[in-house]
Amino acid sequence: MGIDWCKIYDTGRCKVPERLLFSGGSWRTIFCHALTVALRHPRHGIVLFDTGVAPRIEEVTAHWPNRMYRSVVQFDCRPEMSLVRQLQGDGVAPGDVSLIVFSHVHADHVGGLLDFPNAEIVLSQDALSFARKMRGLKAVMNAYLPELMPADLNARSRAVACGDTSLSYFNSFDLFGDGTVRLVDLPGHAPGHIGMLTSAGEKRYFFVADACWHSRTVTHGELPHRATGLIVYDWKVMESTICRIRKFLASQPEHNLVPSHCPLATEKYLVGGRGDVRQVV
Image 1: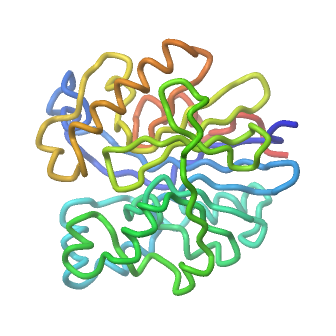
Image 2: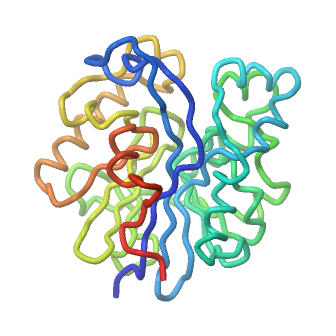
């Protein structure tokens, strides 16, 4: 049994100095993207990994204190770029989405959640606890906007623990118990941050979300600018996670690295607007 299809979507972008993403970059301005993933499991249906940004972020950041978020992060997230609209273009209705895995609950990863009111929400216990307790100015300062979360968050959420030690370098969790989707503990960037390992056809993918912002951080050891430590939950733990990702990819080079905001990953998987790992059917 394997994944029927898997597709990467770009839900928006913002401008950032290249050197903020990796130390070898220049100070020129580049686009930082908001990638998400949809896959179809033969038994469990449509599954998402994050929902990216969405136009409602503009609405919820119109007033204080959420306006602070807009002053720091300004994504171009037009309606046609929203994940729900792009999925509809591929024949996937909002009600078809059975489950959404969140790498973490920062606004640029949960922005489209409200468009999928029937989906089960899967995330780590630390991420769920963070979402439950963060409010007001403290939430915004931690890149979290509670207004993007549904009122029935607790009822729809399933917290998972990446306690399986059989995978080299990482603790993990077999989401469906069949090896098709494995969630991976990638701490450092945010509380309860996780990634996802999956395959489609002959290709294997490691979706690392914000464990790094640019592929060169892993491939060339070029860490983000130290200024980004202001928005990183634990810098030292993040460094350790990046080191383990590098070792894992060295031992299993068949896996393709996909950070959520990486310009190189966006160019590789979405040239010409196509992000399909296997064509949607």
